[in-house]
Length: 164
Figure 1 (cartoon, rainbow, N blue to C red):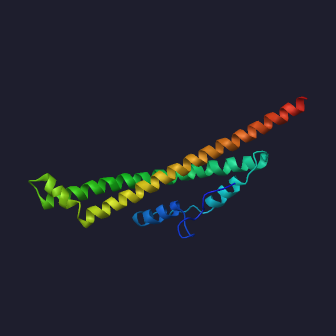
Figure 2: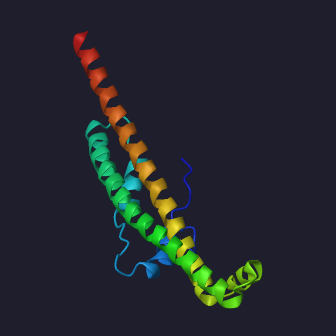
Figure 3: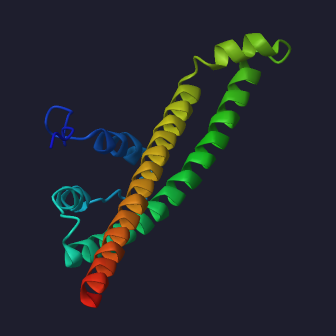
């Protein structure tokens, strides 16, 4: 089986790790912790569809991770929406500072202001992380249902073999 590289950035971090690192300075009150998730995915990749207890264990673990990603994602979404509001406020204030009469001239100059640029970078970092968290949550949901399906299928096979 050919799998994608785990840590493609200088062999030390994944793209998800990079997104977390970029967003972390903008949310100092919350630490982004995903310890154990990579190992769980490795365990899943090597799981046999016929391993009943392994599929049950994976279903439980991925369901828990799906909830965790959803909780973190909701928090990041809140911060992202607040950052969008802050960005609009900073842009409007800078635009008015540069030109109260000519909106387009004020807007062009506002886009060069350090506060506006920082507000955009914060918004971008949080939006990117939010999207990545949602993708991980969806992956966890899919794995949960696959493992659940494997368990049901094995149970049905066992029942059919017992009837013979």
